[in-house]
Image 1 (cartoon, helix red, strand yellow):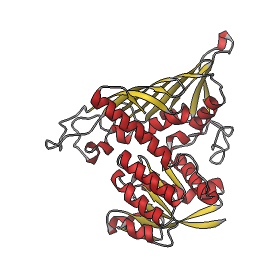
Image 2 (cartoon, one colour):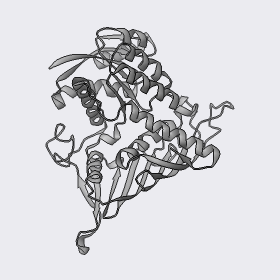
Image 3 (cartoon, helix red, strand yellow):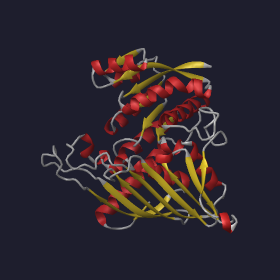
Length: 366
C-alpha cells in the first residue's frame, strides 16, 4: 500500500464528510491507496485553519489555486459551490490530477460539458458524488432489477422531497437564488441519477417547475428560484416514469424514495429507512403474497466492511466512505468507475430538458 495526498476544497457540510471518509476508508476497506489529508481550502485563512485543526489536515489555504498546484496534493476533492466546479476541475486536469466533484457537476449543462471535455483530454480519473445510490439497499435494488428478479420494468416513481425550506417566514439564503441552487439544481439530480442507474436513459419528458414562497424575508424584490418540480417521462427501454422534487414538503426530512414496478414483481425504497428494501414477488403463494421487508446485512453490497451483524445498519457517512473507496480504486487501477463526469453530465442533460419543457409547455426529447 502507498499514501496519496488528498486536497479538499470546501470545509463545510460535504467537506467534512469527505475528510472523515478519507480518514476512515483505509481501515474500512483495506484500500491499497491510503489517503493522507494534505491540504484543505476554505473561503478565509481563519476558516481554513479551523477546518485543518478539526479534520487533521497537514496544511490549509484560502486559495484553491494553491491547493490544486501543490505537488503534495495528488488528488482533488471539490466540495465547494457549483459555480466554482468548472475552474477547479479544469485546473486540476491540466496538472494531470484525478478529481472527485460533488454533484451537480458544475453550475449548468455547459459547465458539465466543459468538465467532461477537460477530463477526457487529460485522461485522468474523474468521479461525481451521488452518494445515496450507494447504500447497500439501493445497490441491491440495482442488482435485482439487472438480473430480472421483477421481470420487465414497466413503471418507475421517484421523489426527492425535504422540508428545510418549507417555512415561508425563514429568511432567504443563497439557496433561494440562481438556477443551480434551486430544487432542480440541488435535490433533483440525486433522484434523476437513481432513475438512470436503476432503469436506464430517459428518452423524453414533460415537466412543470414552480416557486412556492416568493416573498420570504430577505428576497428584497429579487426573483427566487424553484421550490418544487416534477416530470413524467418515458425511458428508452419503454418504461414509464414520474419523478418529483421539493424542498417545501412539510414533514419530509430525507424523502429520497422510489418504487419500481415490473411484470413479475416490484421494489420499494425510502432513504428515511435506508437499511430496508421492500420486495414483492407475484409468484409467491397467494396466502403470503405481499411486500416483504428485507433488512440489509452482510449478504448485501458493501455492508460487511462496516458491520458483521444483519439489521444493524449503515448510515449517511458510510455512503461517503464507499465513494472514497471507489475513487481510490479508480486511481489505483486507472479505470473509470461509475459515476464518472460523463454520468454527471447526463443528469444535467435531464435537468436542462426539464427546465426547457417547463418553459415551453412541450415534451422534450433527449
